[in-house]
Length: 339
Image (tube, rainbow, N blue to C red; front, side):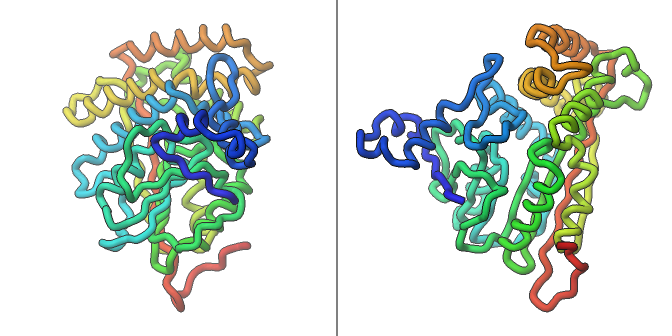
């Protein structure tokens, strides 16, 4: 697995390479990554033969940033709102898998200036500045890992639909092998289904149908959007111990009375509005039911969803699940890993 480092001048440097550099395999790959592939007006990653359902463009990076703010507000009462794993005070190496726009990696690099924080994804984040101890790399984490130093902490967030079940097993296995004994892994994922406890979300609402439609689309694509339900068992299967799990409701809209939840709901509403098309377009135009949808059909559907998002009488929310676990120390007994 070749890591392609990304710096703030990444895009400029591609165009400024000399003719000799342009012939190199790395430059060719970097150019391909920068261009991406375009479909229905959205840009997707271009480093794998197998297509990924989520876009990697300015619209979706904006949604990622708002999503990051949702998590910070939701956990603002925590001493550390960025993660729950009790990692040691002076970590040396931290890995953020699926770094997206890079906000989590940058924040953690600021928190631990003596640590090296690596953010890896299939597409370079649109950063203009980052701490000197933060490194962004373009890579496929299902290939063999070649980082030499073991990690003190591995973080994964909002990677639902990224891999088939066997891909997730492989990822957890590689993460286990790459961690220091006693180090931690943490993952946080959404349930894509919208729910309500007071019957304000009706069966006829598009928001009520939303999650199950996409769960079925993803299954036809050979991926799962239900990783929030399976990650605990998969992490345990990989050999991790001292497993913790925390489930929380994230309101969709400013309907809660509680001031904090109201602010969280406002941000989640903005998150959805920014992300809707990116979440829906590829899955519906490739794996929609009963047959793949046209771009126009997707846009009509999204217009109805956006209209419902404006309705203050719909008290919807999503579940979010967080799991953190520790790699056993040397000599510590652990369960059979199952590999």
